[in-house]
Amino acid sequence: MENVHRSLAVSLGFFFLVGAASIGFLALKMGDVRLLDDGRYPLNAAFVSASGLRVGAHVEVAGVRVGHVTSIKLEDASALARVTLRISREVAVTDEAMASIRTAGIIGDKFVTIAPGASNVVLEPGDEIADTEPSVNLEALLAKYVFESEGR
Image (cartoon, rainbow, N blue to C red; front, side, top):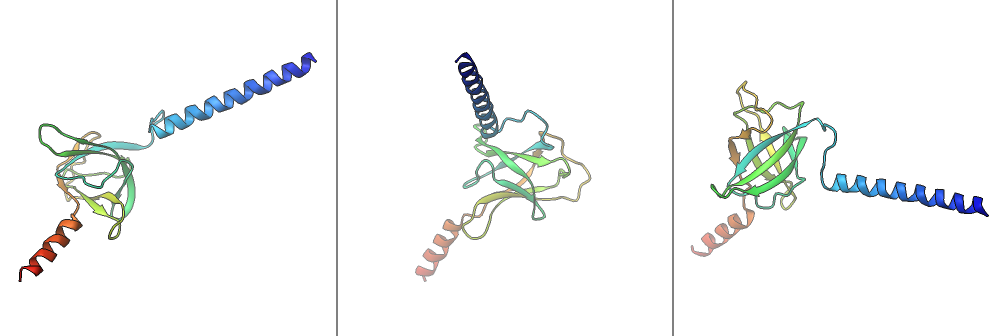
């Protein structure tokens, strides 16, 4: 009888450890906590508008995914949207690069695209991409077109 209780206790203990490890792993993944180096470095970009852009959106260079958006915050002093990107270390972004917010398709998800510049000066981790372009507001363009054509 004592062996049954002991094997039950061992089984429950094992189940508890596996469950706790699983919950810990999920908490780290969902919180985007990096315990080990992920091979990416941070860059910042300030946009007049980051409307529709979400944390986790991908970053492209020449149509190839090279990173993702990690945070979007409003700067109090300038009223600009500060977007933090994590870019693959294999990609060198220069100080003349331009970051733009684009839409996948007509009504798809927003993402950031980086057009490389001609400079040889490579941005360091934590630097800012100086030249930015917000996404085109399709609703504003349609409204402008509709109201202009009604006025004729």
